[in-house]
Length: 353
Image 1 (cartoon, rainbow, N blue to C red):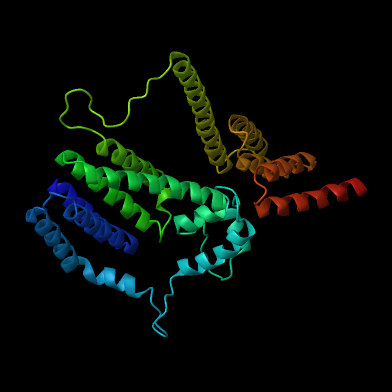
Image 2: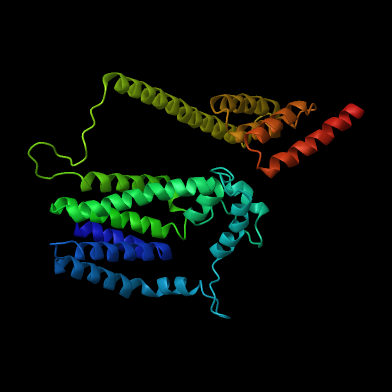
């Protein structure tokens, strides 16, 4: 346990992540606060001393770079915060105003934000660097309230169970899970960590752990859980299993198709850089991209790639068709419209001739 705690703290401090340092300190303080205020529970001083020792070692060897990163966010002229994230957040206010209820759609931030960007730099912002703001821009007020309801219910349920339980195993696991959830939520203020698949999976794992540990008996006679036992009817159970199996098959097919499509696309990119006759290269790339489009018919990238390939042909109508298909699948991508307009002009000019 001590080894993993040391490894965790060392990795965060060595990364010089300001949000990571704040979130881990917040989680540690919160866990100690929860344990201190539980009835009939006393905090053993040894873990506290060990944690303070680790923090002291980390601060001694690595404090200067961390303080420099914190100070870099403060303007030396007027003392105000000058981090680039704040400018992005300010721009997102207008996005929320334009799409207040249901948002612009999940995954559209990268395509939509450039039209709201009020400053100039060399960076591409594919996320808002704030999970709460991006949830509002992409999912609107509806998604934000649903998410807030889910997280709040988990935290309240875990806290209530902590007040009732006396089992040491349940107390420590539930407390650690709540502290971990709180740390992730704090870190989400300054970054898009929940858009990282591993972080998102770990967050929901902790949510499940709060419910499970808070309602599980370590020592029991009749049942290991405090949750009410639901008597499931056979017909409903079979229907549930059937629907779940269908969803699993559908997800497997979609994800498998996406994987195969990306594999075909990668092969086409390799061929584009290979030394061979242009006619043969174009024919091979066309077959691979058409296969990719068939395996993943909802992704606009393959239509756009086919449009780029077809625009080399004398007849631009096929290229225009692929470009229009890409626009229908991803209507927020401005480069698709630029190509479509250029192809329309070329096609019209050839028809006039």
